Image (cartoon, rainbow, N blue to C red):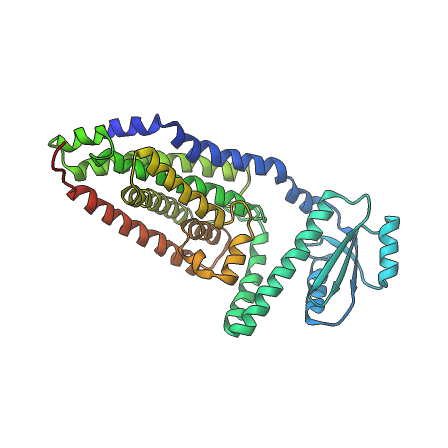
Length: 382
C-alpha cells in the first residue's frame, strides 16, 4: 500500500511543480538578477561619496557614525571614500561634474541620495540600501525606546551582533548573507508549505464521501491507522528528498548561507514538512466538496500566508510587526521563514527554538486531530 501511495504522489504533476520546480525557478531568477551584486560590492574600490548633514539631530549624528564606519580604510567594510567638508551647493556641483559619485544629504528623519549621471549600478544599490536600512532601524529602535526601553536595548544588541555574520563561515555551510537571502529562504519555505495540498489529498485517500478510491479502502479490512501512516509517509519522504536537493543547490550553486548547525537544519526541514502536511489534513477535513475544491481552498490559504510572510515584499513582515504583530505570530509561512532565517544568520538560538516550538506544537496537534477524525469516521452505506 505504501508503494501505491508513493507512486501515486510521484505521478502528481502539480506536487512536483509547486514543491520542486517552482521554488528552484524562483531562486534561479533571483540569482541571475541579483547574484552578482554582492560579489561586486565586495570587490569594487570605494566610490567617492559626499556627506552633508544639515542639522545636529540624533538621526543625523547616528547616520554620520554609520558612514564613518563604512569609510574606515582599515575595515573590511570600506565602501565609501568619504568627504564631509562641503556645503550643499558645492556637493551638488561636484555630483553634476562627476567628481563624486554619491551624495547623502541628511537632516532630522530624512536622507536624500544623489548620484552622478554615470554612476555604477553597485553605487546605486549600496547607497539606497544604506539609507533605507538606517531609516528602518532608527524608526524601529525609536519606537521601541518609546514603548519599552529594555526591548530597544535588545534590538540594538541584535543589530550589532549581525555584523559578526558578514564574514564567511568556516564550515561546509559557509556563505555571506545578503538582503536577498530572505527571498531564497522564503522560496524554499513556500515549496514546503505547498505540501499542505498533499495533506488535503490524504483526506481524499481516506474519506469515503470524497473519492471512490477511499470508498474501496474503507470497505477493506485494512486498518485506517495503517493507511493513514502509509499515505502520510508517501508524501513526507519525497518532500524531504526534494528539500535536500534544493538545499544543496542553494548552498553550492547560489551560495546562500544555511547556518552552521546541520542538526538544526535537518530538524527544521522535517518539522516544517510534518507541519505543512498536517495543516493540509486539517484543511481537507474542514473544507467541503471534491478533492480539487478542497485543494484549491487550501492553496488560497497558502498563497495568502506566503504573501504576508514577505515572499513578494520582504519588508511586509516588518510593517505587520509594527501595526499588528499577532498576524506574524500565527502566520505559518512567516513563522517558518523566521525560523529558517534565525537559524542561518543568528548565533542566539532562543528565537529559533521558540519558533520551532510553534511549528512542532501545531504540527502535532493538527496530526492528532486529523488522525482521530479520519480513523473514527463511519459510514451508513458505501
